Amino acid sequence: MFFAEVTPLMRQGLRLKVGEREPPLRVTVTILESDRDRNNSNRNTVEASLYVSYGTAQMASRGRIIDPVILPHKGAGFLLSGTELDSQTVDGVHRVWEHRQVWLVVPVERNGSE
View 1 (tube, rainbow, N blue to C red):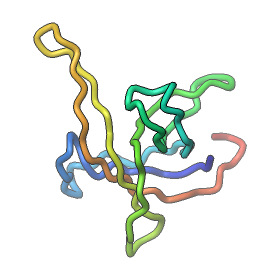
View 2 (view 1 turned 90 degrees about the horizontal axis):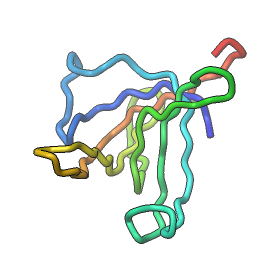
View 3 (view 1 turned 30 degrees about the vertical axis):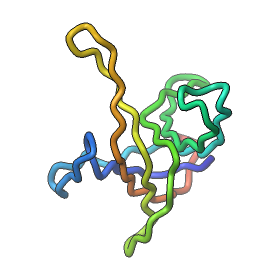
């Protein structure tokens, strides 16, 4: 677990142009193994998740990718790529889409005011 500024570089599997990207999120990044008995994949997976502080000792999820891979990057930080799950209800039917996602992750010091 570490604190970082994370910028999603894709939306629904499509690469975002620089001007289309949201400002970086200041989040806690966790990378954990998920047991196949506790997920819908029916296999062990590695999950990278983003959390923001929400009140006293509570965290709110701001994103998750499975099967993350570190990619080369010339600038500060590193790229983390994986599969993002997106669930929506379409015409009354619950659907789950899988999209490729790439995050630009820049670790930062966390001070006491965050």
